[in-house]
Amino acid sequence: MEHYDPRKLPDMPELMIAGPGELHEEDLDVLGHQVIAHYGDLWTQLHNDCIAALGKLLGASDAPYVIPGTGTTCLDAAVFNLFEAGQRVVVANTGFFGNRLMEVATAHGLEVVEIPVEAGAPIDAAAIGAAAEGADGVLTVHVETATGVRHPIEDIASAARAAGALYLVDGIASVGGELCDVDAMG
Image (tube, rainbow, N blue to C red):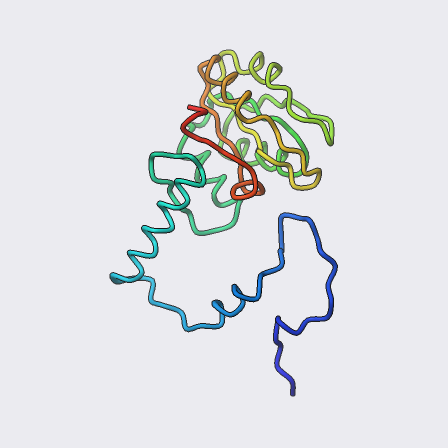
């Protein structure tokens, strides 16, 4: 019986999607090495190095907090820890993942103000700012996976800040592929 070898797959089309993505040969070789323990000095150093590199990638002077789990797990944790039931949030519904943000917010008992966004169009930061007056938060995706549209998070952050609302960005499909400067956005 022949064993599965991901390096010997038939030619596959190149997919320009959020995932799954193709790995480089060097990465496949590294993945073939023995795993290290998830504790001890070596693991601690690797973890700290990764957190520092992620902070640089995000333009965040404060160390990021890594949550092991799915994207929805991270969104649940962020919404649950940043808002209390009954608070009002503005959510740009940009498609599948914009809708997911609305579902997460609703599941946590938040009052959701939906701002529909036409498929393939960017979020209108001025519309978000107007809707955010008196709201506790604004929730958007950075890049909606299905359309590939990069939304103007810098302008949205400015509009949310001017309205006195906390801004939460779902960067699952964009971090590492799109510039993001958390400190500059405030």
